[in-house]
Image (cartoon, rainbow, N blue to C red; front, side):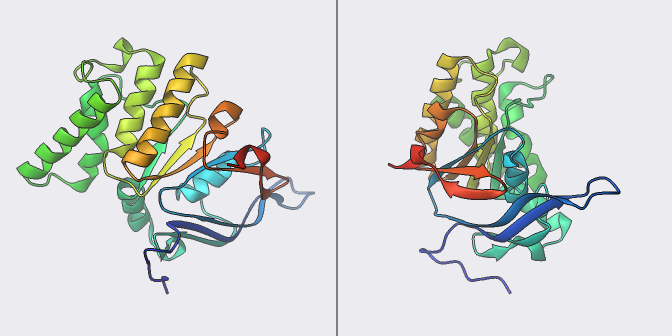
Amino acid sequence: MPAPASASAPVFRLEHVSKSFAAGERTGPVAVLQDLTLEVEAGESVAIIGPSGSGKSTLLNIIGTLDQPSSGRVWLDGQDLSTLKEAELAAVRNRQLGFIFQAHHLLPQCTVLENVLVPTLANGRGREDQRKEATHRATQLLQRVGLGERLHHRPGELSGGERQRAAVVRALINRPKLLLADEPTGALDRAAAHELAQLLLELNREEQVTLIVVTHAQDLARQMRRVLELRDGRLQAHPLGNR
């Protein structure tokens, strides 16, 4: 039975989560994540770091309901996600979660504004006032991230940093509770990476959205409120997060 949400309850919780993958016939399953328990408060910013192959993306996929744990539970806003059917999980992904990846995944044939509005289409046609509200929010957010003059440009006409900023706005358009970023600065030069890191933190505060970032970039990680390291399948506090 889902736990009731409250003002003091964490917005997100992992409860004894483990993940294993099948290996060859002569070996047993390979454990990637082992008995992880984690609570993240509303509005918090968290970085997850760790060596390549440590399972960071696997963990983020489980948090984002793109993958299922081998054991344990994942809670979002007081709801046990393991109790939901696939259609219900798809609705959670669309309405309560926002995703930013290293590759922006913008549709090349659509304008920046059209790309940002794509997640709102899953809500159905809706009323005219709802469509206008979504367009207004998209326009405001794009102006906020410095793309007000780029609304009708296509991704191929933007710089790498501009494309990633458009992807951030797309992730925020449905007012998610949790924003998940997987190596969001990995394809950017140093200046653009710094700019994007500052933008994520500002939007974390302004939009009051909880932020979890998986990254190799220590410059990005150290700006988060909390830094956790994933090593040997387990999470532990990291000195970068001693603020």
